[in-house]
Amino acid sequence: MYLETINSPADVKKLSLTELNVLCDEVREVLLQKLSAHGGHFGPNFGMVEATIALHYVFNSPVDKIVFDVSHQCYVHKMLTGRKEAFLHPSHYDDVSGYTEPCESEHDLFTIGHTSTSVSLAGGLVKGRDLQGGKENVIAVIGDGSLSGGEALEGLDFATELKSNFIIVVNDNQMSIAENHGGLYTNLQALRESDGACACNLFRAMGLDYRYVGNGNDVQSLIKAFEEVKGIDHPVVVHINTLKGKGFAPAVRHKETWHFCDPFNPEAALAELAQEEAGIRQAVPDNEPEDYADLTAEYLLDQMKKDPRVVAISSGTPAVIGFTPERRAAAGRQFVDVGIAEEHAVALASGIAAAGGRPVYGALSTFIQRAYDQLSQDLCINNNPAVLLVYWGSLSAMNDVTHACFFDIPLISNIPNIVYLAPTCKEEYFAMLAWGMRQQEHPVAIRVPANGVITCGKPVDTDYSRLNRYKVARQVHKWLL
Image 1 (cartoon, rainbow, N blue to C red):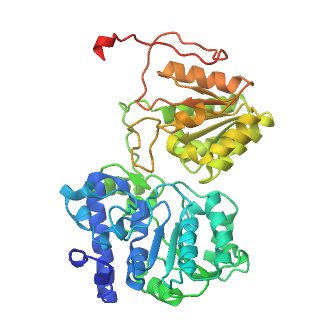
Image 2 (cartoon, one colour):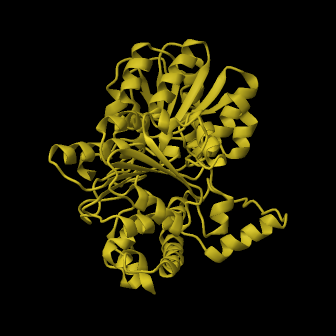
Image 3 (cartoon, rainbow, N blue to C red):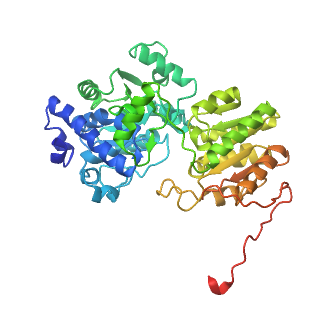
């Protein structure tokens, strides 16, 4: 196995093209073994195998700096930079995090977990290098889904100002977590269809040089493209067309579902896909526990039928609020996915509420912190009655340092005018949601319970207009603490 001989990027450079292609197959096999047993980001890593190997074949990390956006696609990078044991051996699976982490390796430049940051971070490395007279290459790797975030566009807009070596690899797999939304994706499609020759070019319009690789899963084509820009003296975008989930048919067929996976049985997943392609419908388990995402989506769909002003908003994570592709289709124009743009989502909700609509925006706790200024300024100062649903808020829902889910409490509860509600059961949650959508006095946020759906079976309040109060559910004697 070639992978077992890779201890640093220098070992990648020793391989022939034929051997590099074998290495790609080995990497996918190892990824499948670990992710099926451990879980993790599946589709992003399977789609980036060839590109990551080509990057390390051409460039000289850590002298050359590679910054991965979000960094959820860095598993292959970790394998090639001295951390293969964490993927080859189950006893070491937890030796590395799921994101880049400088304390693990000098090849990781930043602790990253949120989206759209790589171009700005790498641009800072470029500026710092130039101030000190350095000559190393700086490479930002960003997915097309991440381009919908405002910081990514800010970074691209500024990149041309640097006027020195700066390589931006745009990994275009035509997906965010779900499908992409927004006008820039029309241009990416035109670029793909014209083999990069389309006269309308977002990147050139920003003053950037541009290269296109039609087969972003072909090692030879990628090596050629990267060698052409290595040592370049100005900012350039290398736009690569890749396939998310490549190498595992279920992940290719259902890209949204396989963006991230829990542990699974690979043979069962392949068999299920074969049955699906044969037209055999899968039986729906009748003992599935209730889930707040599904319950919320069904409730909102029912409200949409009754009131055309109701609109559900997602920022690139529609499954979080239960809006599967089927439910998105059923909602039609009453469902909006703004892409990975939490700031825009909050301001949009405020505007919809100001126009008389009934917006409900759902987001994970870890991501709503990206929109602090919009919550404070665009929404709460204007006191517009939008409803915000905060999911997975707890100490354990997502506990990576970049995805801690408890900052929503100090963030939201300290903004004037917003009402932050914390239900303890299913009945309270839907009473609060109904009240929040009905009232017109304040923005309302609801911290959706993260400990499963619990039914209390008791009458609950239906009016939460009397603010700044709490309810003691159970009194615990001090001597028990």
